[in-house]
Every structure is written in C-alpha cells, then in structure tokens.
Length: 188
Image 1: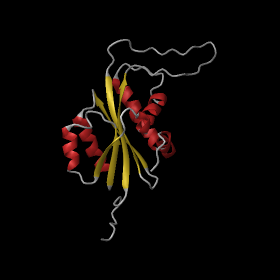
Image 2: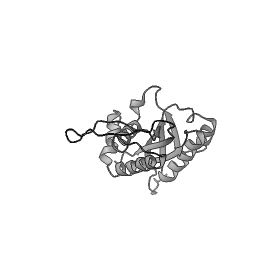
Image 3: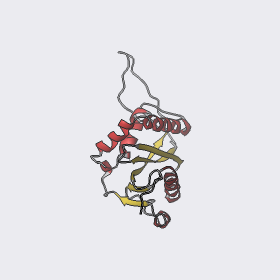
Image 4: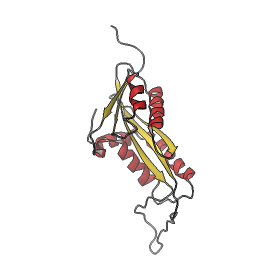
C-alpha cells in the first residue's frame, strides 16, 4: 500500500492533557518595588468563584508543538473531557496518542466508549502520583507565575482573560513549549 500524501498521515502526535483550577484569589509571588514602597495586593476575602481549565500540549517528532485550552465554570467532568477530545481531533490530523492522569472523568464510561470508536485515537494513562511526568503541569505553573502572579480580581472574567492571553503568549514560544517536555524529562 502506498503511503498517504495527506498531511499528518503516518505520524503520531503525542498529546499531554491535564486540568487545573483558577480563582479570583491571588497567586502571591515575589516581586520588587522601589525601596520603602512595599507593593500591596488586596485579595478578595470570601466566596471566591472558581473556573477550571483543560489544557493540552501536542508534540510531533517534526518539531511542531501546539497548545490547546478550554476554560469552564465549575469542575471538569466527563462531558467537558469528551468535548475537549472532539476539539482535539478536529485540530490535530493523523494518529493521536493522548497521555493523561487517572482523573475519574478520563476513565468515565462516556469517554471510554466514545474513544473505542475512534481508530486514530490512543489513550495512555500516566503513572499514578507522578504529575512531574506531565508537561502540562509546567504550562499551568508558567501561566500562574507569569499571568496570574500578584493579581487579585473581583470577578472571574479577567482571570479567564489572563489565562487565555497566557496560552496565546506561550503558543508563540515553541522553545518554552519544548522546555515543558524537557522539564518532565521526556523525549519523543
């Protein structure tokens, strides 16, 4: 059989997926200020609202790296995971190997049954209690330490905007994306 000439056929894209939460509360980091002028961050004291994000880092052996992100109000459950997988398959051609943790939503009947019908999708579970093996943890750390550091918002809308802007910024930095994979001590 002759190899397919369609883009993406024959190669596998390795996609790491993870979820994280964001709130109106601030992520306090070190900062600087002129001597004698202590910076003040006024956090919201009660009833923080939370948003959850499901994110993916997709790597090809050709050197291409992508970031995919979806933000939801509330927790990530099986329907959100399934919607994200559909989104992922629309944007990544060819075979896709998804590597993720053992979150209950990943192991749900809805997700497992749907994935069995997708021949180009392979689901691989990362070892338990090993978040350091998932490069998306590096993405979350980068976003929280650069885009959300020392910021306290009154509503979730600016927090979501900052997370999306952070994902946009890191998309333009493939060296940083590959650095997340290196930090996890993984290679393709």
